[in-house]
Length: 345
Image 1 (cartoon, rainbow, N blue to C red):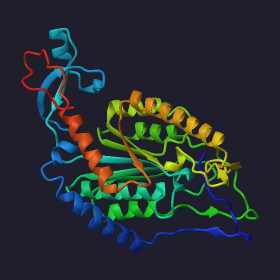
Image 2: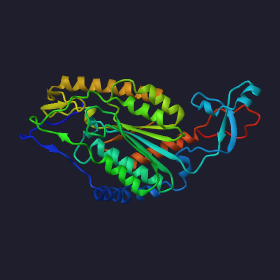
Image 3: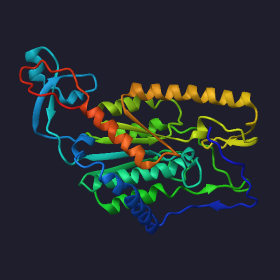
Image 4: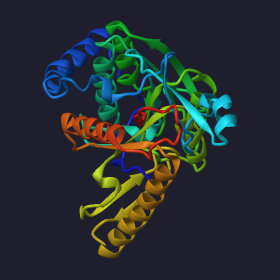
């Protein structure tokens, strides 16, 4: 459950936190100055190794491996050598990147100014600008962005490469839907847990061309997201970006507090001064962590964790280092007589 302080409003009010286009522009300029300028000097010469594109020019043949796209199998060579082989194409400089974004209520948790939503917005804004500045295109699918009774993928932004497109995306991310905060205000029907598999299945159904896909979520979701994530990773280059807050793993001793499940609205008052309760909470959180990490590992997607107390530059440098190590990871040499070199993963 996500933790929230008790609500104290005494009148029916609807708090809407709009982000005007001008505010989105100021946020993006601030990120460009504080983050992108710092990254520019550290990423020189690494552009072609950070992401994988797609191409049309045949560069090599190698043996089929479990994660390969079956559509790239060369059936003539396979029949001749009696071993499945795939075609490797020359990498295009331009690529398409998609952000599959979980904007369910639980991402609003965190300290003021550093909530999981703030971290998500900063990550997407910085990475979008880094990509579009080189002519690449970025698109997005937003789950739970609308103020509706039933959560679903309610926004799809087609991939484009302009700064105006990035501004529009930042504006959508930093403008949460209306939150009804007073007990006397009309209440909407509870929607239950986030169903992350709906977002992933939408990506599976709509992403035809091989792309780099960032699935950004806190993964506080109903079960069933592991299989579509694995299927997405078979077709695309997938990075699972997990958002978290330290309080979700370990409760401090602050006395009586009210815990509220941001997904269902259910509240529970607990005594955090009770050491036994804090131990049980930490144990259950550790068990959930183990299950989540195992699911991400089985899916075969790269994983990047973004904590609300992280420095965004450090987190992005970890991501770039992860990508470079993955690209340089050696594979078994191909036995094909026509294979001259080994393709990078």
